[in-house]
Image (cartoon, rainbow, N blue to C red):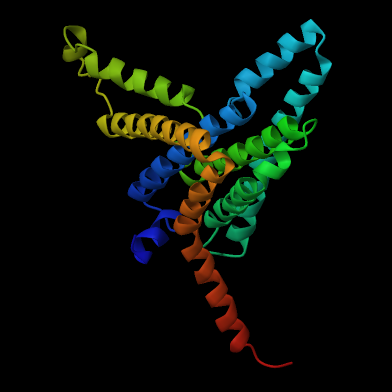
Amino acid sequence: MPLRYTRTLTDSVRTQKADKQVGTLLAFVAGAINAGGFLAVHQYTSHMTGIVSSMADQLILGAFDLVLAGVAALICFLCGSICTTMMVNYARIHRLRSEYALPLLLEAVLLLCFGMLGAQIAQLHGLFVPITVMILAFLMGLQNALITKLSRSVIRTTHVTGIVTDIGIELGKLFYWNRGRAREHRQFVVADRSRLRLHCALLLAFFSGGTMGAWGFSHIGYAATVPLACLLVLISSIPAFDDIRAWLVNRKHRPAE
């Protein structure tokens, strides 16, 4: 993958093409993390709707420990979103090129640690499920907030409810038969085919990532997250290096006090 191409994916200067490409890659990563995490803890960590519904069920059933686990996952997802927002805004204020790369680098580091230390965490029988759920929920919140800000709320990658809804909307427009009064008043219903292709690609990427994540975790265990971490580093490291190089150059030419 050429360096120039990887720079465009997470650079602060955005294009619609780059947004679609990085969105598809992150949908693949989210699908892999979500499916692999389910095999680890039997819970989907990007599905906040399901977690909140489960909290309500467990509250009525009196399983207060599971309610607290759900609250912890919800808070961690929220903290991930907060962390991304703070990092992006800090980078914008300081005019860094890595405003979108920094959250992905953090996600890569956490994924790498999870992949390398997963076996050790699993030995903590009383804490394994809560810690794993909290880490993965934080990662999903981090990533979802990033792609939301990067694409200006056009793309989501960590859950498919909105993606399938958008596909249904565009298919409804596509199959709509413009006739009669609509033709007279030129009020044609036209599908956004580009948007339809984008969301179909996101759905396929999420499913493909889930398939690969489930296969990887079932065959090689927690180390299956290491290639995902490497992929995130690959697409986000160049803007970060650009900022480091610019900082070194400015420091070199800064007049001595």
